[in-house]
Amino acid sequence: MLTVTTALQGQEVKGRAITGKGEPIANANVVLQSTDAKCLGVETTKEDGSFIFYHNADTFHLVVHHLA
Image 1 (tube, rainbow, N blue to C red):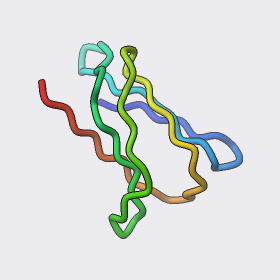
Image 2 (cartoon, rainbow, N blue to C red):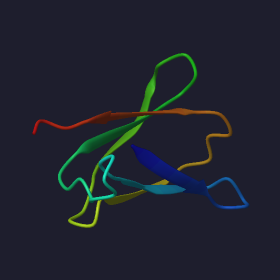
Image 3 (cartoon, helix red, strand yellow):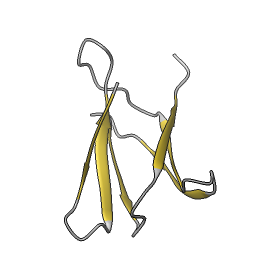
Image 4 (tube, helix red, strand yellow):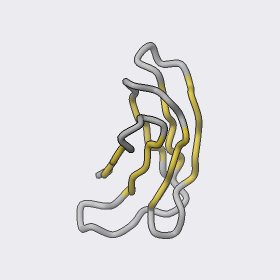
C-alpha cells in the first residue's frame, strides 16, 4: 500500500509506503516515472516508510520495489 500527497505548486511529491497492516516499509525503492515510463527520479524510503521527490511533474506514476 502506498499513500501519496502532492504540494500545491506541483514541485513536491511525498508519501509513505506501508503494509496492509499499516506498518511502514523501510528501504524500499520508489521510482518517479513520467507517463511514458521515463525515470524522473529514484528515492529510498526511510525507516518510517516516507519518501519525497522535488520535481515539477504534473502527471506521473510511482513504482515501488521492495524485497521482503
